[in-house]
Length: 144
Ligand code: RB5
Image (cartoon, rainbow, N blue to C red):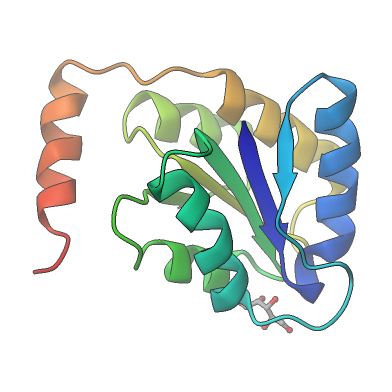
Protein backbone atom coordinates (compact mmCIF):
# COMPACT_ATOMS: atom_id res chain seq x y z
CA UNK A 1 0.00 0.00 0.00
CA UNK A 2 1.37 3.38 -1.08
CA UNK A 3 0.26 6.75 0.31
CA UNK A 4 0.26 9.77 -2.00
CA UNK A 5 -0.38 13.45 -1.41
CA UNK A 6 0.28 16.90 -2.79
CA UNK A 7 -0.39 20.55 -2.18
CA UNK A 8 -1.97 22.71 -4.92
CA UNK A 9 1.44 23.15 -6.62
CA UNK A 10 1.72 19.39 -7.08
CA UNK A 11 -1.91 18.55 -7.66
CA UNK A 12 -1.82 18.20 -11.46
CA UNK A 13 1.19 15.88 -11.29
CA UNK A 14 -0.39 13.88 -8.46
CA UNK A 15 -3.43 13.25 -10.71
CA UNK A 16 -1.14 11.93 -13.48
CA UNK A 17 0.73 9.69 -11.03
CA UNK A 18 -2.45 8.32 -9.45
CA UNK A 19 -3.76 7.37 -12.90
CA UNK A 20 -0.45 5.81 -13.97
CA UNK A 21 0.10 3.83 -10.77
CA UNK A 22 -3.52 2.65 -10.52
CA UNK A 23 -3.29 1.34 -14.10
CA UNK A 24 -0.37 -0.78 -12.96
CA UNK A 25 -2.32 -2.20 -10.04
CA UNK A 26 -0.50 -0.24 -7.33
CA UNK A 27 -2.79 0.15 -4.30
CA UNK A 28 -2.92 3.83 -3.33
CA UNK A 29 -4.25 5.87 -0.43
CA UNK A 30 -4.79 9.40 -1.74
CA UNK A 31 -4.45 11.84 1.16
CA UNK A 32 -5.32 14.98 -0.87
CA UNK A 33 -5.30 17.76 -1.70
CA UNK A 34 -8.18 17.76 -4.16
CA UNK A 35 -7.10 20.85 -6.07
CA UNK A 36 -7.80 23.39 -3.33
CA UNK A 37 -5.02 25.46 -1.74
CA UNK A 38 -3.20 23.31 0.80
CA UNK A 39 -0.15 23.89 3.00
CA UNK A 40 2.58 21.37 2.16
CA UNK A 41 3.52 20.64 5.83
CA UNK A 42 -0.07 19.52 6.52
CA UNK A 43 -0.01 17.12 3.57
CA UNK A 44 3.45 15.82 4.51
CA UNK A 45 2.22 15.16 8.07
CA UNK A 46 -0.90 13.31 6.90
CA UNK A 47 0.94 11.14 4.35
CA UNK A 48 3.99 10.39 6.51
CA UNK A 49 1.79 9.30 9.43
CA UNK A 50 0.66 6.41 7.23
CA UNK A 51 4.27 5.33 6.64
CA UNK A 52 5.49 5.94 10.21
CA UNK A 53 2.43 4.11 11.57
CA UNK A 54 3.00 1.10 9.30
CA UNK A 55 -0.26 1.41 7.33
CA UNK A 56 1.67 2.16 4.13
CA UNK A 57 5.02 0.80 3.07
CA UNK A 58 6.10 3.89 1.14
CA UNK A 59 4.71 7.25 0.04
CA UNK A 60 4.90 9.84 -2.71
CA UNK A 61 4.69 13.57 -1.97
CA UNK A 62 4.50 16.40 -4.48
CA UNK A 63 4.55 20.18 -4.09
CA UNK A 64 5.57 22.88 -6.58
CA UNK A 65 9.31 22.35 -6.21
CA UNK A 66 9.28 19.22 -4.06
CA UNK A 67 11.49 21.08 -1.61
CA UNK A 68 9.04 22.28 1.05
CA UNK A 69 7.25 18.96 1.22
CA UNK A 70 10.51 16.96 1.46
CA UNK A 71 11.88 19.25 4.19
CA UNK A 72 8.62 18.80 6.10
CA UNK A 73 8.59 15.02 5.66
CA UNK A 74 12.15 14.69 6.94
CA UNK A 75 11.12 16.32 10.24
CA UNK A 76 8.92 13.30 10.98
CA UNK A 77 10.38 10.40 12.97
CA UNK A 78 11.06 7.33 10.87
CA UNK A 79 10.82 9.15 7.55
CA UNK A 80 13.59 9.14 4.96
CA UNK A 81 12.29 11.40 2.20
CA UNK A 82 14.23 11.83 -1.04
CA UNK A 83 13.60 14.65 -3.51
CA UNK A 84 14.24 13.17 -6.96
CA UNK A 85 14.33 14.70 -10.43
CA UNK A 86 15.83 11.67 -12.24
CA UNK A 87 15.62 7.87 -12.28
CA UNK A 88 19.26 7.38 -11.19
CA UNK A 89 18.65 9.21 -7.90
CA UNK A 90 15.37 7.32 -7.38
CA UNK A 91 17.19 4.00 -7.85
CA UNK A 92 20.11 4.77 -5.57
CA UNK A 93 18.10 6.40 -2.81
CA UNK A 94 16.26 3.06 -2.52
CA UNK A 95 19.41 0.91 -2.86
CA UNK A 96 21.61 2.93 -0.50
CA UNK A 97 19.39 5.14 1.71
CA UNK A 98 16.30 2.91 2.03
CA UNK A 99 14.23 6.04 1.33
CA UNK A 100 10.59 5.45 2.24
CA UNK A 101 9.13 8.65 0.78
CA UNK A 102 9.65 9.91 -2.78
CA UNK A 103 9.24 13.67 -3.26
CA UNK A 104 8.92 15.44 -6.58
CA UNK A 105 8.22 18.95 -7.85
CA UNK A 106 5.08 19.31 -9.94
CA UNK A 107 6.51 22.49 -11.48
CA UNK A 108 9.89 20.84 -12.09
CA UNK A 109 9.41 17.40 -13.63
CA UNK A 110 7.03 16.45 -16.43
CA UNK A 111 4.46 13.69 -16.11
CA UNK A 112 6.33 11.09 -18.17
CA UNK A 113 9.57 11.49 -16.23
CA UNK A 114 7.72 11.56 -12.89
CA UNK A 115 5.97 8.28 -13.70
CA UNK A 116 9.31 6.65 -14.58
CA UNK A 117 10.88 7.99 -11.37
CA UNK A 118 7.98 6.59 -9.32
CA UNK A 119 8.21 3.19 -11.08
CA UNK A 120 11.93 2.91 -10.30
CA UNK A 121 11.45 4.05 -6.69
CA UNK A 122 8.64 1.58 -6.01
CA UNK A 123 10.34 -1.40 -7.67
CA UNK A 124 13.87 -1.08 -6.21
CA UNK A 125 14.77 -2.91 -3.00
CA UNK A 126 17.19 -1.66 -0.32
CA UNK A 127 20.61 -3.26 -0.72
CA UNK A 128 21.34 -3.54 3.03
CA UNK A 129 24.85 -4.62 4.09
CA UNK A 130 27.21 -1.66 4.54
CA UNK A 131 24.36 0.67 3.63
CA UNK A 132 22.28 -0.59 6.57
CA UNK A 133 25.05 0.54 8.93
CA UNK A 134 24.93 4.02 7.38
CA UNK A 135 21.14 4.21 7.45
CA UNK A 136 21.20 3.21 11.15
CA UNK A 137 23.69 6.02 11.81
CA UNK A 138 21.47 8.43 9.88
CA UNK A 139 18.42 7.49 11.94
CA UNK A 140 20.38 8.01 15.16
CA UNK A 141 20.69 11.69 14.14
CA UNK A 142 16.94 12.05 14.71
CA UNK A 143 16.29 14.22 17.73
CA UNK A 144 19.88 15.46 18.07
C1 RB5 B 1 3.21 26.68 -3.24
O1 RB5 B 1 3.00 27.81 -4.03
C2 RB5 B 1 4.68 26.34 -3.21
O2 RB5 B 1 5.35 27.21 -2.37
C3 RB5 B 1 4.87 24.90 -2.78
O3 RB5 B 1 4.17 24.06 -3.63
C4 RB5 B 1 6.29 24.38 -2.77
O4 RB5 B 1 6.93 24.58 -3.97
C5 RB5 B 1 7.11 24.72 -1.59
O5 RB5 B 1 8.24 24.25 -1.41
